[in-house]
Image (cartoon, rainbow, N blue to C red; front, top):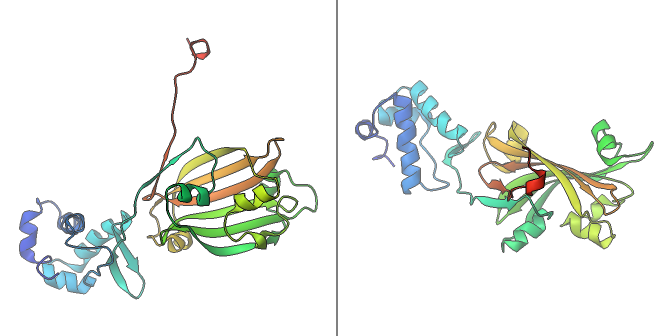
Length: 255
C-alpha cells in the first residue's frame, strides 16, 4: 500500500485542493480494486508521513470518504474500506414482508432482535392503531439482514388484540398474522430522507450521518381496521424504491 500513498502520486490526480486530491486518490483505488473491501488504511499520522500532507489535510480528505460511505471508521480499530453492497430495487406496488421480498430474490434473511414485548402505547401509536383506553401495544424492533449484510431497522407496533404474544414472532411477522387470519391486504406508505444517527448507524454497520430512507407504513385488514404501524430505516446505499406511473384516463385529466 506504500506505493499508493506517495508525494509523487498527487501529480496524477488532476490538481485542486490537496484534500480533494487525496479523496480522489483513495476513491480511484477503491474503484479500481487496488483497495479492497475490508482493507485497513494507514493511520492519520502514517498517511501524513507517507504523502507529505498535513494531518489536517489528511483528516479532511478521509472525512469526505467516510461521509460518502466509501470508508468506515471503527473506534479503536481504524479506518477501513467499506464492504460493497448490492443495490436492491423495491417495487412500491406490492405489499410484501422483508422475508418474502428477499426470498423472491433468492437471498437469505437474518434478524437481530433488539426488543419484543407488550407496552403502554405512545400517543402516536394510539392514534395510528386506534387503540382504546387501557389497551397495550406489541412492539417488535429488529435489524433485518440479507446474506450477512444489515439492510434495515424495523420498528413495528400492533395492538395486543392483533398480536397478544410478540415473543412468538421469530421470523416473518406477516406469516404469524396470516396464521391468525389477520394479514394486511393494503397499506399507506410514506418515504422520506433521513441522516442516520449514531445508534442506528451502528446497528446498520455504516457511518453516523450517512443517508438513509425513513419509511412509515400503516397497514389495513380487508375490513378497513388498522393492523400494523411500522417505522423502518433503510440504508440509502442499498435500496432504490420504484413505482410504475400511468397516464390517467382522459376524462380524469385536468384541463
